[in-house]
Image (cartoon, rainbow, N blue to C red):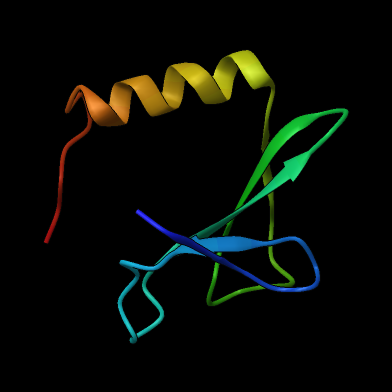
Length: 69
């Protein structure tokens, strides 16, 4: 999966749909990773510590989350 970024440091997957239904992530050197809805760039941001982000990614890869579609 390739990540596409912009100058603000936010990235989204190259697999993201063109309709805007995606999330963006940003690496924060001090606090870990930020996550937001790409449709609401000035909306709320979830911040994960490095450890929390690692566990989240492991869960995604292991299929621990329900896929809706």
